Length: 292
Image (cartoon, rainbow, N blue to C red; front, side, top):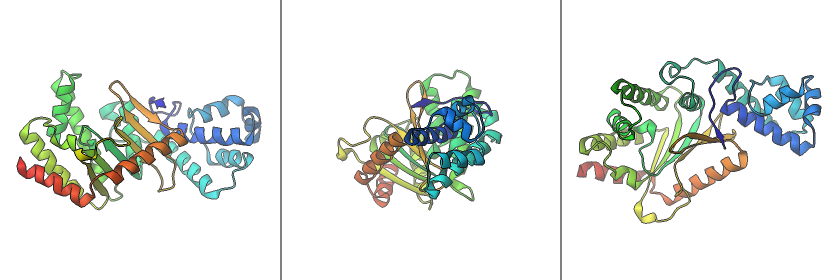
């Protein structure tokens, strides 16, 4: 697991670390040293170190030559690695709308990943997912958290979260599969009126073709994702390499190892199968909305 670092040309990014980790895995499997890898692309050992740790953007020719030296014959796998390299280069150069709003820290990197992702699967046991939240719900959470005393700072957080929802409504929308525990629907965040508006917003988003919304009911009992919230973020199609984002009380954590990412995806799929079907989930949300 890796904590986030600032964006930039000379910093370690999520996509570059993911790509570097895959290249390291291939090099180890081939039994080659860093020196041998460096010789293959006519570079120094330090460059291989920086590439494998995600500190530098990677050129397509270097990725191709290294994969050939490592014996990678799967052209689809190579194409996925090249796509990650391309996405990382684009993210390093981009000056997205969020940069002036959230700086260059962990949240900026998360929004950058969300902006370039093709699909997100998210599990939320206690909160409404951020891309579904109303302004009132987000504001109530920020006030309750107590980290921000300046009302303007809280409003900035609210504005950023509302802008993020544009990814669900764009011409090339994010495919978003959310599984929410029933408790998140019943917790009175912000009071009666705020929560009623939030449930109404959920019903609106559930109608989108690119959104799949499911509710895990109380009656399920123990389940595979009981430990905590996370999101599986996919890039460049269904077969692209995934990364996992998990929130803790103090930090944002990225899970970039392929085996660990696959484990999270498997746990999500199991929990999804235990959840209500989308139609039944909407019916439950609608019944709670009408009760309010």
